[in-house]
Image (tube, rainbow, N blue to C red):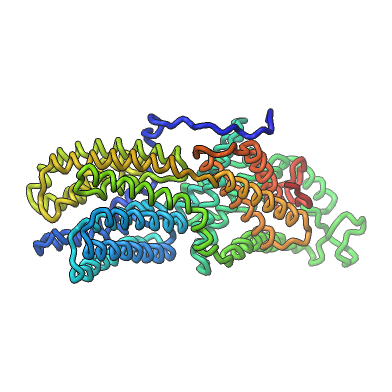
Length: 630
């Protein structure tokens, strides 16, 4: 580095074209797409048969819960889906009771904004994953503006709860067929990321981005494997060994074999047997033995000429178990070979056991309480409440009949920092504008009858989930006609009025929501980076001390290594989030880079201390690092 001066504070350029660039689709894009169709179709078709499509918005509120937790192991998914359904019912209950007690639009918008802020904070704190708070906010905000009576609320909640229970069954349906599908996918992604990092290192490039992405993927894999506590299984232990191999590759990317890592990843992604990994030390020795094979054969022949076995074990005429010349062990059983294979197998079992001791120790750690995770999210909650409320008020001032569209638009914008919020605003506006054109084309077909309307809603649900993984704006192209079609469930409405109202509310929500984000910046972002740097420094010092202590247990070494890896991932996420904020003091970018580099060296030292890699500069693969420095 040429200078130790932190980067100066400045207003970052806001991307436009880059925000609309399409990415690769998710490997499992079809899972949420098919799940939401399977969750929405039966309740909607049943209500259509009964002639009560006007009740479909309530069942759809529960059905949309099938979009959540597709990256969670099934045991954890069952709990997450249950909590999402309860959260949806709680927000819906508040909205329905509020709608039955008052028709004052300003009050209803205020309630909707407060609900949106709470939903945003809780979803971020629990890391529930996509679609996060947006679906919950859409459900509760839309319900605020549906005329209700207190007597109708229990029945409507019962419909949502029944549909939510069906969505829970849909989300859990693949479990008997692929009980470890989410864990397999997370492990495969970690192996692919480690392979990409190894390829970058072999190409002689710096590869800071690839290394950070690989550490994040490995950390995510551990999060997936460890989220199901006290539920060990043979399959999960095999996947944990593969993630350990990804960590070994990150410790020495130049020496890793990308082809082997990708081969393991492909094998894990399927439904076949999980490949069993060997001990990296023995693999390295086998390569060395192949190179020296000819010389060993010649040496073996010469030993045989001296009456010795090729492995140096000879007969002991005096029966003492040692050769007279002191050159090594000898046969004491009249020619029977010592069972070296059994000793080697026992060693492998001990090494595998040691590798997983730390995993078991981390599985026993209790997660931080929810209250401690909500504190840092205060700026995001305030930003969300203010932006949603102002967007709704402006929409009401313009005479909108459905101000919740502007409210939901504002709620969907707020990301980790202002730069990402701006990108989401661009994506939302472009997607909605294209989406209203799609609705104008689809509306004549949907208005042919109830069945056509339901089929169009199902098609939009599928399209939204199939496309949103490539870019948010592309998914919004289907989300917009979906939201407009839902408003026609109680009865068909003029297409022109719906299109005009949606366009106005989208522009109002995006503009006012972004201005609120600019006004309420996260001024604690720099403080969070300093705190993350301190955490990495302390974790690195602790890991170095543990690695340098010959008496350290495998559990202590693994816990220290995993704690440092988690701290590095958190530092990178915190630094990236802070870099996109405005109106804050300069960030210590160089300190962040140096801390990451030091942490990576310490992580490599801890891996060597475990004996999974040779010490640098040595030829023996059985040496252990006795000292480490951060």
